[in-house]
Image 1 (cartoon, rainbow, N blue to C red):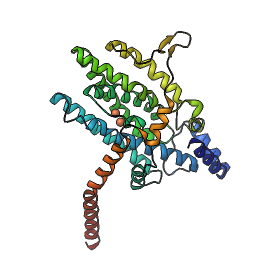
Image 2: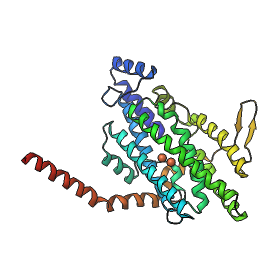
Image 3: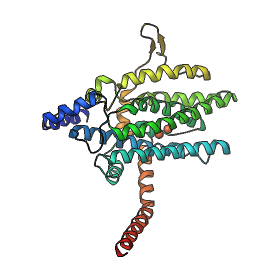
Image 4: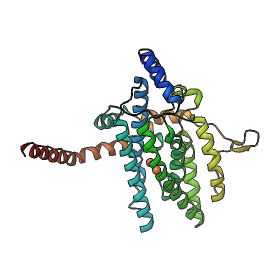
Length: 327
Ligand SMILES: [Fe+2]
Ligand SMILES: [Fe+2]
């Protein structure tokens, strides 16, 4: 899949006007933002459309595992906090669909691509949320990994994407804190609660490391994306940062990261850690995740059940414009 995408990128690039391409690359190298009406190479447009829409889909699908727990959160306070968090994710999806639309693909097309399985979303959301501790682990680890990915994107070269990220990152910090706070409460609770917290960490640790994508050596798009400043740090650099920041947080909770190879390496000034199960990662990317079918079915059902709202809005807009014309 990645190789085909790369060779397509190269083919399309060869067809671009070399002067325009050089001017574009100089602007990007000078850290200027590229805006929707500016000239851009087709491969840049295509890569960004894929990346931003995939990001939007992840926000929307990401509401499902947590939405599942709003009614079962253990107190009114926890319900209110989780509800606010899940609503934030809907907002992130909307900013991102809007940013992607400025590149010329309609929201309808993007949503159809999600429902047909053509478009991907983050593999993490194809794992089930089995206990309340999972909501803590998701906020702490999954939103934590999302922040790590998204902070550098505030300086990504495409203006609408970068600006959406500024707001998203502020909210993600709240999400990470609410998750960690759940973990703190559980780890300070009964022995059973602490066991639940450890079990959630055991199940979410490795899928969280997968959120940074395949190793740099197997990520042929990375070099081009770095050159165009769509990406500002590589998958492995971000994964390393995440491990270095998260390990002491697990220690503070009194939990054990489920990786026997994890240890501080003074020479590199970071942790060494074990190999991610990339077979599992690619299987989940192919749609073989534990709850992948359930997730897409939930999205399709929501789309179909919301059809009357879209129809009503369209009918209202049409009636309104007819009245304006008549006046
Ligand atoms: Fe989000
Ligand atoms: Fe979030």
